Image (cartoon, rainbow, N blue to C red; front, side, top):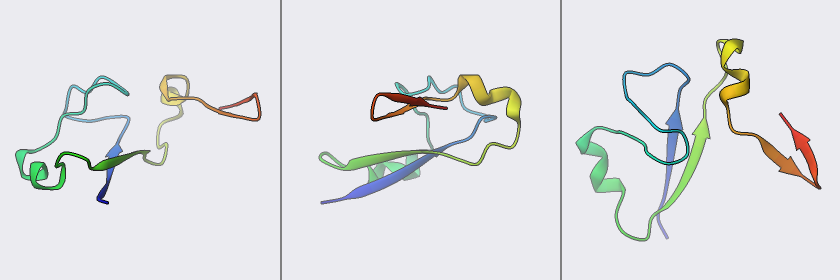
Length: 65
């Protein structure tokens, strides 16, 4: 099994659509082959104005921000 970690920063030169569309350099294509599992990682929050725009997580039916 192949795994790839994709990191998204709050401020980027790319026009990503969070959770749906991720733009990346063509040189990454060799790592993103059919059947590859992708781990979507959100980097450290440097600007708290993005706090409400980040994905939310749920654990045991309790919302965690």
